[in-house]
Length: 147
Image 1 (cartoon, one colour):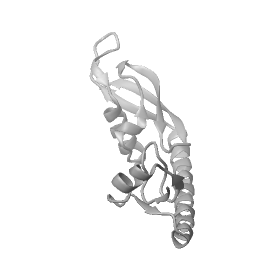
Image 2 (spheres, helix red, strand yellow):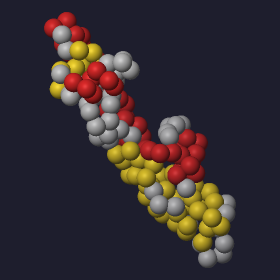
Image 3 (spheres, rainbow, N blue to C red):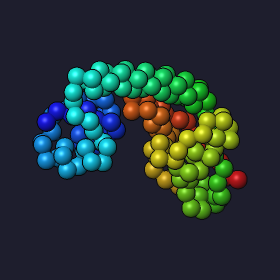
Image 4 (cartoon, rainbow, N blue to C red):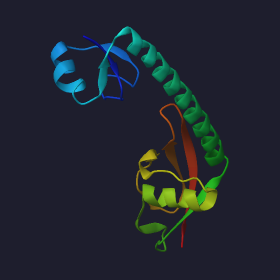
């Protein structure tokens, strides 16, 4: 059975996609929950408008992610942490600490899940990867200082 997805469904497809699924899956899961519509001629036209809107939204999200990436890569950020005499930290600098430093020093507010970094346990220069979009990643320079 051909259906048009009304929402993004992991492993099946994205909103507005016309896909062929098993009849039972469509009748028992997708249609009763409002996740899909039967692909009629009118619904196919609606699906094309959904895809067009999704593509425009995706393009604007990607463009804004590029501007944020340029902002973050242009400078180095300082993270203060308690440290001993030899430069070893008491604890570690986590992704939440990195996000707080980015927000305080650049005004960019991110979710901590977008930052990919191992816990930092020493002072000095480090890097972290920030995934702003599926297609946009940037490397952020961090300077961990005793504070």
